[in-house]
Image 1 (cartoon, rainbow, N blue to C red):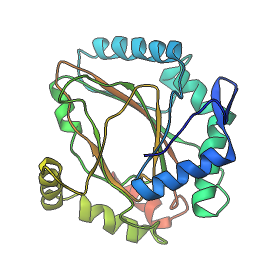
Image 2: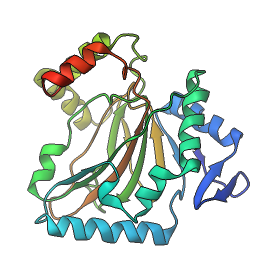
Image 3: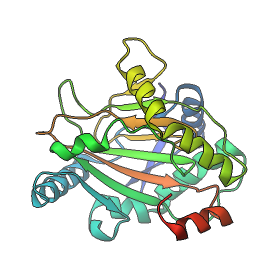
Image 4: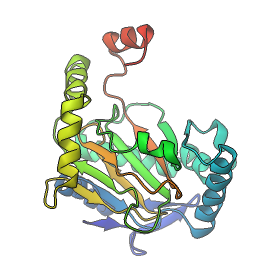
Length: 253
């Protein structure tokens, strides 16, 4: 799997790596070919240490159970807030999207999440295969457990195209999010040889993939350990859908 992040093609601007056009092209090719691309060492070690401490304090305050933040309001002063507001990070996402689709990136905000899996409740948030609602997913691991159960990212990459109509997207999601399909995918995940891509995450690296087009999930980790990942979802292709707005008004999708 190709990675980007060599000293020869990155300059630092505002604390985050600014990739060359060649590196962006390599990332897109890697995502198209193998399911994901990696920008190595996206965060500096002191930034990663700061986030690690933030996660530990947050999990402890929650009684060592699952914690999830949406947006960056509760992340003030952390590198995740700076990433969300960084024009360099935004430019990376925009260039990856535009290089892949040939379309100008729309002016949309990220859908940002910080997920902290730990304790007995973490099992409920693992091995739940799904499509994202956004074209590009940027995943930043913060805490990754050592050992056999490290919460690896599992993926069946690029199984569909970006749908023209939201109704088509909704049908795709329903076909995946049902007990029979979930059972089959979990069995596939346990098979010694399967078509799933297994990605062992490294804290501080940035992983990019087509979350909208790829069926994916995370494996569980041991309940006495913590798996924390930050997610930046970018470009909802159905943001103007009347059907989507109507369904949101009537309850959860």
